[in-house]
Amino acid sequence: QVQLVESGGGLVQAGGSLRVSCAASGSIFSINAVGWYRQPPGEQRELVAFITTGGATIYADSVKGRFTISWDNVKLMVWLQMNSLKPEDTAVYYCNADLRITRADPKLYSYWGQGTQVTVSS
Image (cartoon, rainbow, N blue to C red; front, side, top):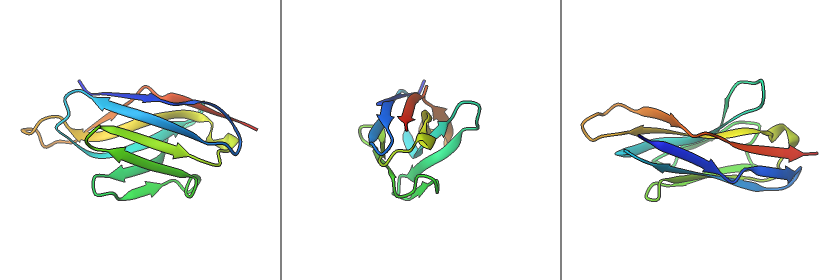
């Protein structure tokens, strides 16, 4: 099965920077798009950043200009560079990928990582 594993989370002071990473492995024929989501305690999971194979990106208004998503379709890794962090950015960050698992099956499947905690102190 497909696995997504996040890493790089931690504790950082407001105004600081952090980069979280996600590595994909398993039965992957191709990846159509990848994204980073976050979920503060007791709140809904929300999209942070999204990127397609064509390079098109979308960012949540709250992180635009501060966060940057990037990925390597060969290494099957995706990163989220977070700068000028704010306490409001505190959340569990999840990697998501929409991908095909076989050549014969054209359907896109969505997979999630286990999440990595990012805590921003005031």
